[in-house]
Length: 522
Image (cartoon, rainbow, N blue to C red; front, side, top):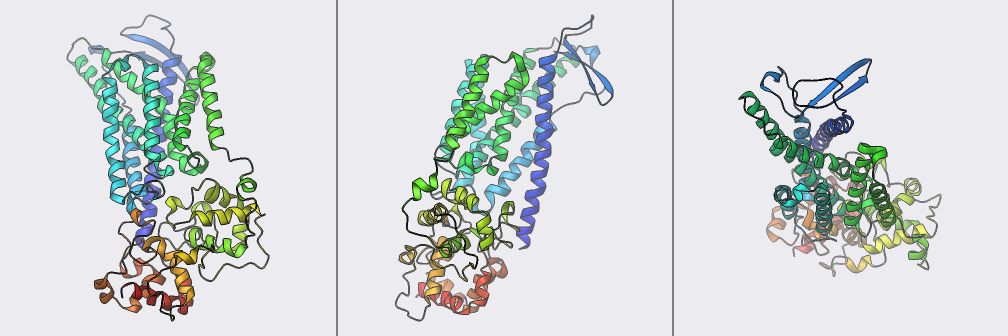
């Protein structure tokens, strides 16, 4: 479990640096745009290419700011402060975070087999390859007449961003697509600073030092890039926190929601810059975009009654089985999955009381928006979601004496039909073992143990193919039991194979699983 511990600390430290750097970068952008919008004509004659001045007070002092569009040779200061490392650090830490969170573990959080059957390496290749391609397209736009008209450039950019969101939400999980759009635009913003804004300023200073006339058009073009970066700050900031708001990416048109949220973010930034001077069209467009987001993300009217009315009565034991099989691997007091050392967001679903307390949240995430389980890594079926939905619609009752099942029995009536067929004539394999394999193990290993479960495409390394006779000969029954109960890490194998500690005290089911696995290789 040490590698899971290291992974979590890497996630925390890199995320911390990323947030700090982003705050500094966005803060700088806000400050300088505010300065530019509040500059006034010089109050007295000043030397040099002064275009405006500004007085401010803060922390008991007074500051005088003077802006020059260029410097004369005799005006070169001893110390000139550059604002660049904030953007570089934001991008570097964000890139590392993209790898740590979305590319490790076989890109499992990027992939949703129900959206598109990508392999881990395919998802990573698309994710990384998109960053330079997007910046290349952006650079091409700057070589067109669009560069002379910010409004038209913004309109074309909105169409391209929304189109990108559409494509990515049809390739990746919606949650992963939102983060990927943010990473792509963040790359464009950082590249603007690194390749265009800073070099332009350096070139202008070089001409000053050489006593040559300064080409101020370089500064104007750099300013154009900086303005575009500025209006992307709030939309990109949203993508950074979007994973905490599943209603935004859990609807039927997440790509359109993201596109409208970009309009809202850019519109709010415009209002912050110009306040009472904001044109009515900007106010109206921002407001209508926000209304569109609300409409697209609202739940259907009383979905529990409409969608699940007339369903057969559902017992809590059935729902508890679904929770234990599909949810409690992460949402338990001590998660069995190596992805989490503690239950995400503190939500625990491994006791009847906890399920009762979080029933409405479970309904929204697992049934209404289908944003849980993450990337559907545990293979929650549509029948299981319908079962939970019907239980919630029927009042979500949890009996006072309710208990969690001792093992993950099939949660819906259809599950036995998906039970493994290998060794079906072997009467000495307990039904509990067959049910456990069908409900838990087949998600990764497939219904017949061939390593082709519904989430196998997202895993790296791939699940074991129990039909491999070479592997069957190379391992012992005791080794198989150890891996089942203690997980892959216990024998130096992949952390992707989680432990099943509940089987440690269920010898009948455990021994039956070993027999079933052996039968797959017969």
